[in-house]
Length: 216
DNA sequence: GCGACAG
DNA sequence: ATCTTGTCGC
Image (cartoon, rainbow, N blue to C red; front, side):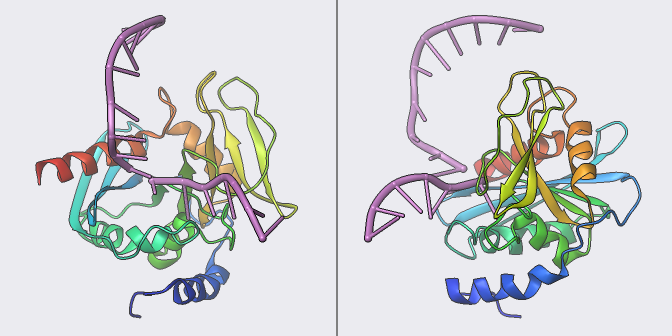
């Protein structure tokens, strides 16, 4: 498939792929967790994937790809901007992760097919979205304690959860990507946030992509 | 119609 | 995403 050039083409791709999302728990507890993130500088980018051991949260593998943006940033079509570079970075790993933690939304998307769904469906690997800010939906404010959640609602549907990962911090927006249920996705994000607001996976990938672009 | 809008 | 100071807390 040639990569979409226009918004109309990109939306058609989403409409076709969205039906392949599996919102249930497919695999067992993960052993290798991958964090994915991309840093930009104009049309240049660095896509990073860092794999952590689920138990120790220690790094076991990493990969960075330098490239150019494949699509402009358009809300709702964000995935088309960074999926090609992230797929390449995933292919270059010497480890096969069994969970992808994406820096963006999954089902919490206008067409229920955000970045985490896109990466999950294309790779077949269980995936979840953990975004720093809201994109779609409405919600009440979750309680102040770590672990408190609020349903993220869109058109009367639960499309994700607003999760407080540390006491008093701004919540994180968690949603299903592929082959992981929402309760499991929430549990996974809590496991990955023993100390900071964002998952260790996201933090590691963010640091790596920034450094790769700066050193380049 | 107008504003808001993952990164 | 990125532009941006100082400041509070561990």
